[in-house]
Amino acid sequence: MMDSKSLIINYTHRQAGHCESGATSNLFNFYGIKMSEPMAFGIGTGIYFSYLPFIKLMFAPMMSFRNLPNTVFRRSTKYLGVDSTVIKNFSNVKDSMDALDKNLEKGIPTGVQVGVFNLTFFPPEYRQHYNMHNMVVFGKEGNLYHVSDTVMEHPQTLSYEDLVRVRWAKGAFAPKGKMYWINSMPKELDIRKGVELGVKKSVYEMTKVPFWLIGIKGMKVMAKDIKKWPKKHGNQKAAFYLGQILRMAEDYGTGGAGFRYIYGAFLKESGETFNNKQLLEAADIMGRTANKWREFTYLGARNCKNRTSQPVEDYGTLGDMMMEIAGMEEQVFKTVEKLKI
Amino acid sequence: MENSTENTDPVYKNKDYGQYRELFYTYDEQGNFQKSVGFHGTNTRVPLEQAWDLFNERIEEARLKVLAGKASPIIYYMEKILADPMGLSMMAGISLWRVKLHCMPIFFKRLSDKTLAKYAEAFNITVDQLKKME
Image (cartoon, rainbow over all chains, first blue to last red; front, side):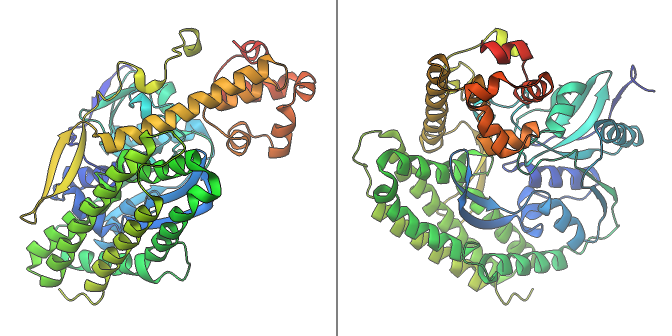
């Protein structure tokens, strides 16, 4: 068809803290709407917390600081009234690649969900089984695809075979070739309504979900569990479990402190745009919470470094600190609970 | 394939480690959120190193087990792709209890070529490599 031709869409790559909200904001910008990463993240209700100790991810209890994959893109386009398409899964490899090629021919930059284990340009230390990574494909040159991965500083290239392998990565949350794109952008975007809806949904998800492991409640359960770890599992395992919190919060493309900085930046930016006191106040608390998170990770890292039988920092202190953080986050969502812009 | 030039060093000791700059946000005392591009700090490096140390330990343990004849090479390659039996069963499309059986040498010897090929594909190696382990 068009294999020998080179076809590159004029797409601006900008680095971001979080893969999916970065991709979403870049896509919005491609269609001429100035949308920063925090705004996309906040309107798309990326913030979340869940603690699922009975599921083991990389040999440690699973916890998540973000919403399910694709939530940010789906909700931000829905709340802002943007016409977009999400194809959840394909039946076979060829269909998925043909659909991607067709989109590129039409000049539509297309987001894809991939697994990072076989992602060739990715930093090797991050190549673990994590199937919820997002990037945007914006060009094709022969056998090479140009991709914009917002975790990286610059756009990258992937061969056809490599792209197939990562799009069809297997395991938990297998992407199955999932792809998404924006069809058209309305002339006027009602950001005000988007912010309102997004904040409302986040408040629900963080404080009101009737399940004890999700949102603030989950953080409190985790805080109590941290104190029990050394007795229950011994020091080494406790340190590894603690490390899991730190890895999830700081390492895997979160922009720092488990997305809390990004969400705070969203509250601040929207508060300034609409001159809203509630949002600005919440932003300040969120910022301080995020700093507290960072403090927690520095303390926790000292325990992880130490491999002897006695922990450096007391797990009781760390648990109390986590409890305090949970309390502060609760305050944030209480502040914006009845939001009027 | 890639396995021919194997690097036995833990990943974080490779020269590439920490050569990628990432975007971070911070909150300063004036109440502003700042963006900055930079390398990872100690609070993020240490837990990653810890994780890779554990993975490498597990791989080494599995290798010794296989050499001693207590387990089949499946275990070694499973640890090598950082999977657990559940993850491997998802990746290879073989049910969990069968995967667990195949981890024993006696059942591994009886495997058909078809099943071996399924495993080999999941591990991204050839069947010969799977049988011999290296």
